[in-house]
Amino acid sequence: MLLWTGGKWIEGLPAELKQLSAPLLFGVSAIGWLTIILVAFMAWLLAKTAFGRSFYATGDNLQGARQLGVRTEAIRIVAFSLNGCMAALAGIVFASQIGFIPNQTGTGLEMKAIAACVLGGISLLGGSGAIIGAVLGAWFLTQIDSVLVLLRIPAWWNDFIAGPRAAGGAGV
Image: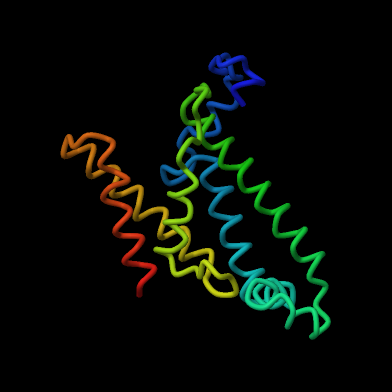
């Protein structure tokens, strides 16, 4: 990203993009509703369809899923493609809320994403967990960040406090 932008922020984003984060219905923005609908759809897809069972089987035991006839390579391609789409949606949400993109955007968010998943009950080894759990884990970490800001605690404490929470969640 730094090479592509020359180390500069991306500014001058279209006003329509910023409008996506404006409250629309019940105080939730259009992009918020899109996210809620996508989470609900993906939760249904993974919990109630053959694709979801194949998805979890592939994550739990790749060899076992292959032996059962699951097209594991196709499942893995779909999983990584969905991951890319969700990352793109997260980028759009971020850009619509902030209105510009700083050159260090996303730095350090990998561990927060993993911590949110662990707090939400998703196995790091694969094969178990639910999207709703990951969403609740992310919400919980966001609440920690918000409370620390309200208490005027320096920002570097966020990770220090969230880390043991995630480790505790992994141990449960």
